[in-house]
Length: 245
Image (cartoon, rainbow, N blue to C red; front, side, top):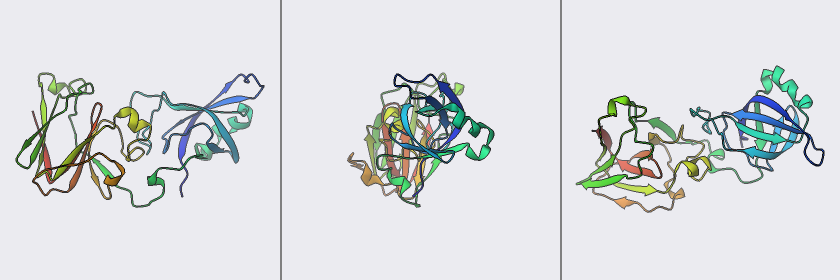
């Protein structure tokens, strides 16, 4: 079973704690899993207990894709920097791994992982729009939302975009938001390239891992279309999709 890993980007020394224990901070990014206190870090042929984790500046998607606008994660260990600083001169040690104290997510235990294809090229939903509006038109599901004109300036004068899911067989809106995604509460945390995007997911989508009931429609489409929105996630099974404004 593969161990979680991350790329070591910097090593910082802190004063000893109240008990005299040395303290060193390791800056990591490109995480495949977010460590917690008590996990055992493997670095430079040493095994060290993680004493503290700063999760406020997670910078990289769990699979290695970078997330813009965020810093690296900070992991504190009770070891002197002198022992670990040699890592900075040895590129072969730029990646570190750790053994979690708790059970790993399902995707560490299988080689048959789903694949993600991002669909929203040149557009996206507004990051602060909380009012997803869904309508049925026969077997077509219409998802109305505000466009993100901050990033995509061509939508500055466009009040609304509509994502049409054609030949829709079922859909559901789950309560997974960005905070839940980063905390690993989504079954695709650690797999989806980034939060806040629109994907088609191929392979086993593990629908049984989310208890949210599906709403059935009259279509027969089976493509799994997955949109991470402001404070919820829209999952749709449909034959095709299009976006209009």
